[in-house]
Image 1 (cartoon, rainbow, N blue to C red):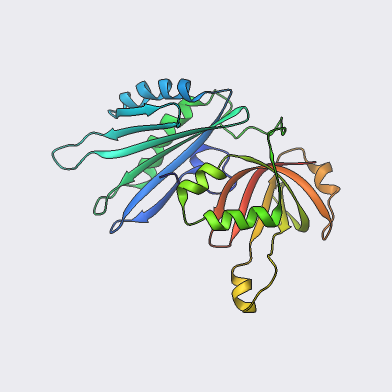
Image 2 (image 1 turned 180 degrees about the vertical axis):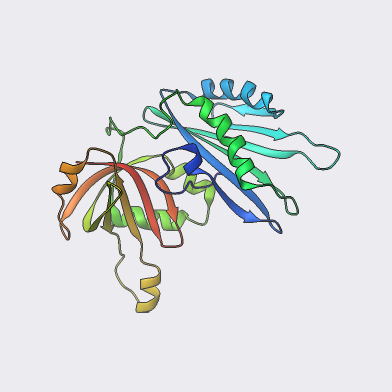
Length: 256
């Protein structure tokens, strides 16, 4: 089970999240992006990294990009699974690690975050902990903002489908600009992604989707050229879906 990393996550620590609770079981996830890496190379690097923490690798399937490991059982608790998912996106390799706890077992978020990111950050070259800007968008998936919003919404209740089809992938999004905001020198462009209104108006408002593009650095000229209520094309990397506000989140966006 992969979890969608939160938006605007440029480091492993920012991507970290927890889902679930003590009664129903929980999962902790974190991810990094490695330039020029391969699934085989990353898995071979992770084996000794995990072993140093006492974690045993059970299997590694390069063809599917899935590695299974476990925190061995002790006298007090059963073995706890750790799954690693690796997938290519152009020249970037997305690596996500998920630590799952059964119901009735708990762990401190900060402790889990430290262990996951200590391992994942060893895969990223020093001085390159942040997500890399998009340099080559030739493999970007061209899509309309409304279509992207609809497809993500339909997959939102299935973490595996969301991870396989969207997480870490690069999209060339075209749509009407709803607005542009700025915070601490970072620009965010919102696209109109509302579907045609049908039936109950209040229900339609609750289900309204938004596509948000957080611009990469040095994109001032591209942002200055945008106008609200006019069509524009931006290329960005899918980072997550915020179901609280029905927002599809893209990061490192550049103008096209």
